[in-house]
Image (tube, rainbow, N blue to C red):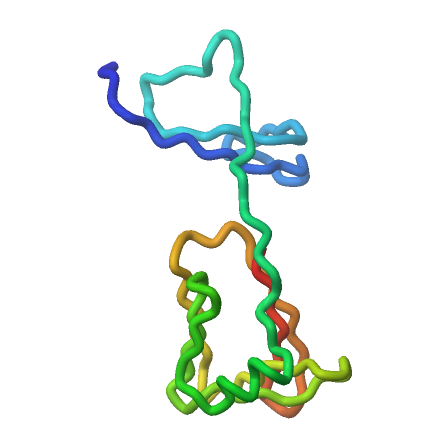
Amino acid sequence: MTSACIVVFGVASDASVDQYDGHRPPRGIMLRWFLPDLDFPAPGFDVYRAVVPDIPPLPFDDINVAAVSGQPQWEYIGIVTLFCASGLKFEPSPRLGWNRLVIDPKAPVTLKFSSPAWRIQVRAETVAQAVGAITPMLQ
């Protein structure tokens, strides 16, 4: 084997799904790589977690919504941009001073991240037939 760079990635396992070979994996972090002549290292390996900045939820508060409602795009702190050709639409949420982004199937909303997303959490609910409202959280 040459001394080339190799991509190795960690996959969290809760031990609930069998592996490709039919065996149950252990619970924890599994390392994966795809080089046929690279065996498991004899002394094992250490996994270190990357530092991920704390990203607050998208602020669908009254101040931000007033500025972006009806606009075709909204760039949030250089991390994510929301696009909707017909304009972003919001409705008040039960939480005073906060809103929900309304998504109509005829007017989809696209999110574009400036770098790979580590974790995305989206809470959705039906507010009318075939119309959804979301409150996303970026982490």
